[in-house]
Every structure is written in structure tokens, then in C-alpha cells.
Amino acid sequence: MTTPQEELLPGTRRALLHRIAVAQAEGRAPSLVAAVVRDGRAVWHGSRTSVDGHGPDENVQYRIGSITKTFTAVLVLRLRDEGALDLEDPLEKHLPGTGAGEATVAQLLAHTGGLAAESPGPWWERTPGALRPGLTDVLGDQPVLHKAGRRFHYSNPGYSLLGALVEELRGAPWDDVLRREVLEPLGLERTGIRPEYPHAGGWAVHPWADVMMPEPTEDFGRMAAAGQLWSTTGDLARFAAFLARGDDRVLSAESLREMRTPAAPPELTDFVEGSAYGLGLRIENQGGRLLVGHSGSVPGFLASLTLSLADDVAAVVLTNCTSGPMVSQVGADLVRIVAEAEPRIPEPWRPLPEIDRSALELVGQWYWGTSPFALRLTADGFASLGPLSGGGRRSRFRPNSDGTWTGLEGYFAGEVLRAVRRPDGAVDHLDLGSFVFTRQPYDQEAAVPGGVDPEGWRGIG
Image 1 (cartoon, rainbow, N blue to C red):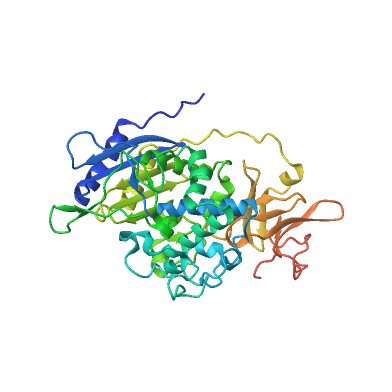
Image 2 (spheres, helix red, strand yellow):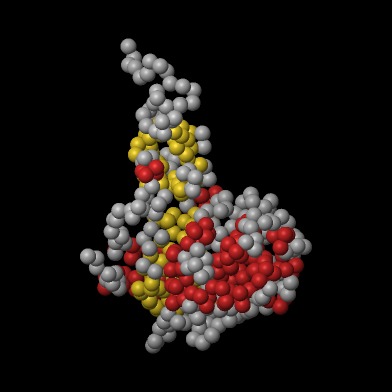
């Protein structure tokens, strides 16, 4: 018998409140709101505000900046899954004449298309989108700064192009497509391109004095797909649960796993910091904990969405100031607090409902040369192969209909694992991309490349 997950413990809730209180006070934020998600549902909301009285709750809208890019990436992956495009298609195939070169859809999603970081002309986040009515106005005369695919270079215009791609293939405005295909199915009723009451106003806080002034709130026009959205901690908590689990009405768990997979060569600073970028999602290693999500920043607002899949915990942090609180760090801390104070209780072990006898025959210890490996069947029907101890090449494998297995990650990603059998049907060895794994080190009975010395193993004398 198991005990159902309850709300967070009082000590955990106080630690979460303390963390956002420190962030709001030290960051001098007019207000700061946060939410924590566990087991696919929001289990905590908190807020701090400089105004006496009722603080903002989970239904108050804040601008979320570049978290918008994750929503746009979901729309593009939906088009891919439907067969309307391939991620390796050059943008020119679907949007000719943009001047964006031969950057592929995948490269734009991963910020490796070589495009400039910002749109030319006046600061696009503080000026009307009407100043940039067309894609040529967004891109300027020199949109390409780097050779496509060679380096990670964050590009807001790149996501403007992806929004235009969605419009071209759907035949409707980007925000209408987003509403119909993502927001409504997921029940994100308080998310949209324009604020709806109640919403926070955006502020700039003076760096050297405790005074502030309002920031302009502009419609970004063509740049909307890069950072236009307003949302709430309640809606983003639901969106975080979707990013972790998937929803076949919107996007499958497999496609979301692809979004969470690094797709861009990291810059040296990213490599040192342990961060990477996937398809519309940031990935980072913080204190041994793998976090995925996105941050957002536009004049007057900061936002962060952070997930730890291993802990099944996510956090959302929103604030209404141009600079101040380090919201991404606050989000990571909220995840850590819950994960450490109330570790995830694993599902009970259960035996497999059925087993493929030919697959069961392959489990156990194998040797690549003299290196011991273990092959195991996992509860999801996949197999894992890795060294018995220490580091080394390891991967999960999915089964194929012909009895072979395909590697899913690391050195063996895409490589085929197959059992090579003797005339009597017994397994001789495993072949993995020409690597031979035998039941004994350099098994004399197996077909080891280069053969095995007929005298076998010996001492030094």
C-alpha cells in the first residue's frame, strides 16, 4: 500500500517563502511571484510585493519574454510531426527570399543559424513593432554573422523567422495558431500576446537609489514569436508539467525529449558552466542536477521556468522589474529545496508483464576485448549497455521489429546492436557498429576479429 503525495511539508513551504522573500528584498523587485510543480501539478504558490495588502496570486499576468520561444518551438515541432516540414529543411524551402541564407529549421531552433542576436534599428523591445512591418525590417541588410551550424549564437530574429514559418504553413497569424494548438488544449487561459486584467505593470528600478519608473509596454509585431507573451505562474506551472510529460493533443513525450536534447555546439563559457541549448530549451548542470527550461527578459519583466526531470519538480519565477533578482538562480534554488527536503518517492518495482525470450537470452555480462560490460532489459522495454564499473561508453537501446536494437544516446547513438548466432542458434557474440562483445574475454569459441591465440591466456613464465 502506498501513501498518496500530499502538499509540501510546512518546513519546505517556509524555505520556499524565505528564498523568494530574499530574492525580492535583495533584488529590489516591485513584486515577485513563484510556483512549484511536483508530480505534474502545482503544489505551492508564493509572492512578495512592495505594496501593502493583497499580494499577486497565480492568476496575475506578467510578461515572460523569451519563454515565448519555447512555445514557438512547440508549434514548429508539431509541424514536423505532421510531416509539413523536416527540421533539416533550409528555411528558404518554405520562406524564400528572407536573406537568412541556408540556415535550417533545426539550426534556427537551436540558435546555430548564424543570424545576428538582435534586430537592427532602435531597441526593438522598447519601440513599436510597426517600425518593423516586414521580415526584411527584422533582419536588416546583414542578417548572417556566422556560418550556419558552426556555433551557438542566440538570435531573437531567428525566432521571428520561425513565427513567420508557422504563419506560412498554417495560413493564420502566429498567435491564433498558438491559441488554437497549444494554449486551449493545455488550459492556459491566462496566456496571450496582450495583457488582460489583472496584470502587473513593468518597472525600471534605479541602480543606486530606491526609486523606480514605469517601462513602456510595446507590441513587438513581427518579433512577437521571440518574446511577446504574457502569462501567470498558474499557467506556466501547467506548461511546465506538459514539458515534462507531454500531451498527445499538443506534442508527444518523444518530441519533447528531442527538444530537451542538446542541439548546439556550446561556447567555451557554456562548456565551463555546464550548459547547452536544445530546440527551444536551455539545459544546464547545476550542482550535479540536470535542469531544463528557459528564462525571459524584456524591459520591465524577468521570468524563469526550470525543470528537473529526475526529481519531477519544476519552478516558475516571475517579477516586474527590468533587472535585479536573478530569477533563473531563484528557480533552480526552489527546485533544489523541494528535491532535497522531500526526495522523490520512486514507483514500486514491478515485474514486466511479458518478456521476449530472445531478448532475455542477451542479458548479463559481456566483454569488449577485456572490458566487462552489462546488458540489462529495462522496465520501459528498452535495453541498456554500459561498463560494469567506472566511466565509459554506455547507451540505452530501443528494440526494432527485426530483433536488432538501435542506440539512443552517447557514442552508440544510432548504431545497431544485433546478436550474431551460430549454426545451432546459440548466440556467438553481439555486434555493435563492428564492436564485438563476447561472453568471455576474447572468447576462443566466438568470432573475434583478428582471432584469438590458440594457446589462450598464460602467465609470464
